View (cartoon, one colour):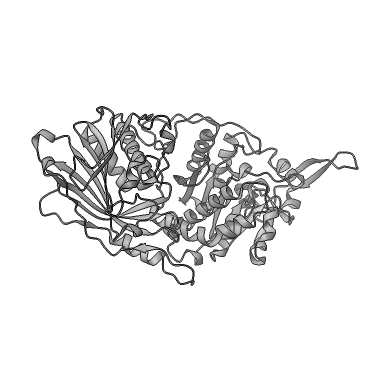
Length: 567
């Protein structure tokens, strides 16, 4: 609930605001003598009470809309007075237990900051009798800040009140009351007040505070943070209510595959463990903050995905292969969390040297050549069981600073035996990760192992840059629905990876990851009825359908002499 809104104030005239809001600070709030008015809309709004309450219900459940410091809210208690009489309030005991389990302090590090989190009692508030307001919906939510080692976790009562006066049927009041004992307990991310009220009355939207009794002088200055926050709250309520009225729908839905609470809790724990070391020791030319926090978020998502797929003891049931592992940060985090696996990339990175020896030994400098390009077709293998390679030869042009350009010819037998080549023939319990893995992106669903691929740059099976079109889907089609209707190159790539996956039998899931990147679509394949028979004929057909893989080996072997790219 914070936000620096100072830009909306003109120093020449503090009463002019770009959103046409009035600064109305006075002690005569319509809500009663204990309330203080701050801002209201200059004129009547066009949205109805139903729009306002729907928008504010969403803000109650997602307070991060109002503040970047807030990670989320866990609804602990909910009472709907409009429901059937005698219905019991809802308690989310799983949230309470989850929080306590995830934040036990066993390492001797600083404690999570908490204030009165055992207080689940709904806090009422007094309002003017003239409005005849009574609660129709009551919540107790737990606000989780992004850094709960710095900012305290608190509980907060959220009320939705309506008027019983038939003349005020379109009146609605939202009240937020933190479960704190004094002003000094107030965390940074909410205004330093006892309660906040957002009122829709006679088509005018306004914000009111119940201040702490010690000091009211700060509320008369629009440049004070507590006043700017009131402006921001009115801005959000007005904008989101209009959005509901206009039928706005979110373009992207997060948290489709793993539970948001579990992911965010794991992310915070991993961030505390690994971000400082990775940022301070970053050896690449890229921005460490972007890449470090992105990889921490991907690691948190993978851990929660593996718990969901394999169970809490997933470490004993699977291992990972990170193909195109780049700087190795994701591998470092996963390996440090006692998850077995390897990272593989065509070129060693500077960052590899900063990791402990046991991590460095799990980062392999190899090129990936899928075995399907080197092994005989399964039908031929059945006829000639002793045949291990397909007998093909691959000429690769090389250049040298001293000698003239030359051609080196590799045989499939040579490549299968080369220590510089990884043929992606992994143990059965392997889970493949493709984190912005460029040329490997389309190949990963064909390798015969459960996987998660985050597409980045668009390449075909030959390793050439291409642009895939977003496929037209029949309304009755059983194929995967495309969440992004854009016709951009990236949308085409994501759509094509989904198509490849479903074409070879994967039950495909898609998640828009909470990472600091616009290329945040994750395509996940865990279930495939034909997995034991890979490579199936469908795999060969898919490669043929996409134009074949001629040139892949030549392009891949040339990576051994090329500088690594950064994203």
